[in-house]
Amino acid sequence: MTDVTGDGAGTRVLLLGMMGSGKTSVGKEIGRQTGWSYRDNDSLVGEIAGIPTAQLLDRDGVDALREAESAALRRAIDDPGPLVAGVAGGVVEVPEDVELLRRTDALVVYLHAPLDVLVERVGDGGGRPFLQPDPATALRRLFEGREPFYREVADVVIDTTTGTPADHAAQVLAAL
Image (cartoon, rainbow, N blue to C red; front, side, top):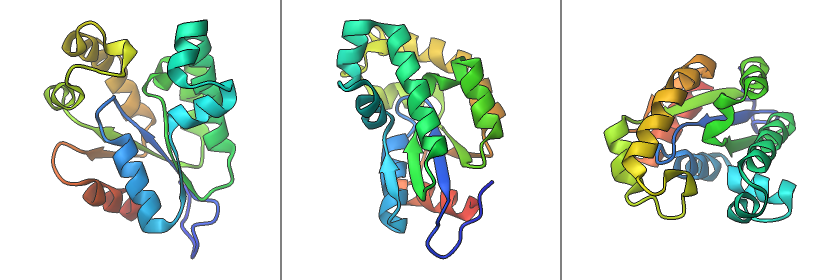
């Protein structure tokens, strides 16, 4: 785990979790509280692929998207920081990415919420192609497959069922 110094130089926080767990809101809040850069997975993928995530998926398919998400993870891990990065939920399905998460000196945080809360938060799954046509069923399948891996690679697990992004950001910063 990294050590926070005065300006956080070198500190990297990687936020993992399911869609709806709060990666973006907590990541932005940590950035707001610390002044560190927040890097969203979709932004990193867009930089790497040269097109937005949804277009990459439509044009080149799931394999190309997964490759770009893996590259985004590597970029977040390699960046000297300080930074906070939201990581693609599916990286735990790629053995090489799991190994990277195990070996990194970044703080790996699993933002957890129970399945029923995630289903409520994502609603109809608008803008989330992996949840169509039935968001509840898709989330259940993804959650059951990924949840044990999130716990396995995480340095810290934070329950985002209740509380605010500021509360959860404070928990992440306290873990540093």
